[in-house]
Image (cartoon, rainbow, N blue to C red; front, top):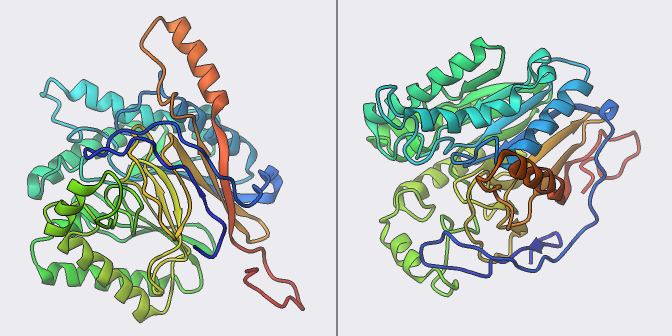
Length: 408
């Protein structure tokens, strides 16, 4: 059992293909945090991954996310106070193809559906920021120049949106590993990595140089909270995670994990190398990120790290348009195979709060019927999104005489 009471939604259909779920009971843990009043908030960062088949006209998750972006952009008192991080696999199945390809209109429409969450008047006026990380599908599930070309295609579309006053960009830049950094306020730094780049890096020297840059970025962060962002998770209780032979429904996947066949999975040799080097970098610097947030598995997860050197909290927010099942794990503080997204709220009193919003599993998208019927469905489905989990990740600033400055 983890150090906090856990809540868990166990998918009722665990299949070898790892692409089906069903309704399941939910067990509630600690009481939820109240949503703060805007005058108590300095910045908000939204986390959503794997939204690559969602469409703005039929996705309740994107509709609700866009409404939240507009709400906070209008009410916070400074520019660029709202950030949306798209955690990769922004365009299924193989990224953005060339303009001459017959599927280019579909690819661009899928990307624009996510861009549109930052297209409201207040979001434009206040400079809300949209950061698009590359996932393995954005690379076209390939490597080298062919993969980088797919990333450039996506980046060019984001450039065109930015020319229209929508503050979106791809980070790190196409073909670059990172780390890319941005401070959302004086004591909080976002650090984005292209983990697919690392998994496909051609040699050990290149990987060593990459982590030298990661160590330097961690040192440069000094006493700031660091939020590490990637497509591939630090760990996961989903199909791409570290599974054991007894995990129900994952027998075939387990054999593939053990053989190292699935490079994209956390148990592959190259991913174990990534984890080992990341833990080594954190250990050498003596700094644990407040959060490591990623997608890749299509669920919502809040986990304790499985390493003493790891981040303080591990987040998986990859259910922007698809769902995959979960297996229970002792370090899972919250888990749900439900459509949704997460937000990190940075309060003026220095507290950092996590909120997880989710939709019912039977409403991932509204059907293609008449426009009137679809809008009626969207209204009901957006209203059905609910706060399913919240937690204080960092305490408010300590006062003289406080016995526990970390608030733990």
